[in-house]
Amino acid sequence: MAVDMNMTILIVDDYKTMLRIIRNLLKQLGFNNVDEAADGTAALQKLRGKDYQLVISDWNMEPMTGYQLLKEIRSDDKMQAMPFIMITAESKTENVIAAKKAGVNNYIVKPFNAATLKTKMSSVIGDF
Image (cartoon, rainbow, N blue to C red; front, side, top):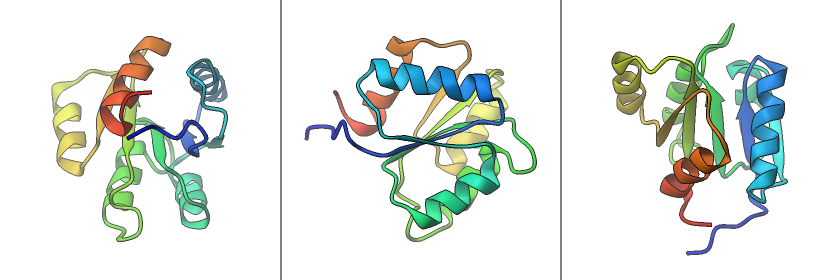
């Protein structure tokens, strides 16, 4: 199955610089259809109003964390199968386990580069 390079991706982070970095990495990989949200609450509003094929979210955000966002998505019938990649600065084992139990598709520890992002995305959406 070929990956649709025009797929719509939602990136969620409360740090504008990180949003820019992720957007640039996605662009390097050939994905230009990228929306942004500053936290889980804003992301949920966007997700309910538009079809996305992938969510890439930071873990640590206020008022709604990426972990809470993941749990919301997994409990929503319309969105529960949506591919979700979590990004975090901490590689705590308990966080990885919690995210896996909540249904995360993959996990990226900061800092990361385009090659890492591509590998993680390929494991979730297929090779591109």
